[in-house]
Image (cartoon, rainbow, N blue to C red; front, side, top):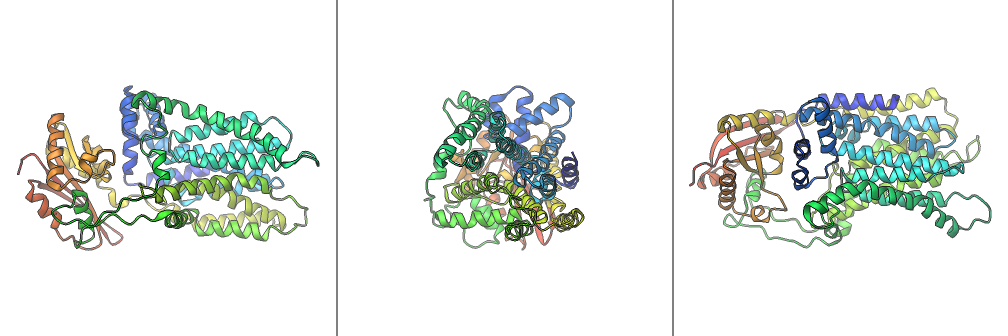
Length: 539
């Protein structure tokens, strides 16, 4: 309970100091709105995994809260589960000091910058983090019971169910799940129950007692969403956003830099943020090694240098035979979080090297879960093997939290605090009628505040719009607005360190866009600008 309350306090404070909502979180709220009125087809059509939105919808139905309020409560309360779950896993990794290991890992998970900051955001990451941590905890309890010769299958089934539910929040749960299955199987196989027990026999039993129940539970967890996708799309899919085949195919699309006559509106916006010059071309594909370097760099950044130092110092300095006898750490159990971590990062290597070509610290924020477990266990093992007093270990743990604190509690999305104001200005200009806004996905918070439909300029599932010239994009959004009986608008968001050249403004005016509002926000040397244009009159 202490670990849950500590994590809850961190996340509640961060939520209070968060100025806006991430663009992806707006899609989750749209899913919740669709589910509240029973429109599950509309929820699936939004192409995001729906678990966070479904929890928000249940809370709104039960309490009458607004959707953003319900989203904040769901995020904070679910994310706080990560701390006690990580503590439970660490207790299994350090069987000679389980309470100390649980405290160390739980506190590190509660104060971890990326787990805490994203755990306070209205989006699907808090629920995905909770599901991953709970699945690791259930699998760890299964290992602990196997060590004691007790029944394990129900706990491994629960681990699989948690993984399946995590997939309903984010698709990369499948990757971490593969690592968890491998880690649990090998950790079970490492348990030698008799001297003549051959490795092959132990591995066979581990597959039956560990891997099979986890896979069964995972099937139960993923079934509702997979069946929903089948009923909606008429085909069996694992994700409504990224087909698995695209992760396994090399990235081959390379474009030359376009000219003013061929550049899409999206590239016009990108060039404006860069201060003019040549239009941006698609970057060269990084390849598997380039993707690996990039993804591993991001994963190390999420892990945090201090926690990595604690982990490696704990393992290296605590590895020598302690005065209290061998067995402070359980090497086999370490495979559970370690292989989960490796599989998760490996999936993001493929994501970076694929046609999608991206990953980031945000996408890899779940790295913080196995790192908190491993670092907490290593710290507890180090203290146990060297006979540190509890007060000394508590002081060191407190110092780590103090060092992490400023980054963890940093106010979030500060420069975007005026997004609601921008959305209200758009609504006030239009009046009560429906609105269609042409813009990038980063405009979602603005269109949500304006109660407008976003005609997403960069939607990969809308090829008729993605690479169009400005005049063609404007024509398409006018057609969409006419079809919906709405007023067409264009919204542009730019961030820069230098004054913008104004080329984009001149191009838009040339094609009949009339600017009626401009909003600016400055933060840490950058200027954030929102431009609102009416497209009601043809050029």
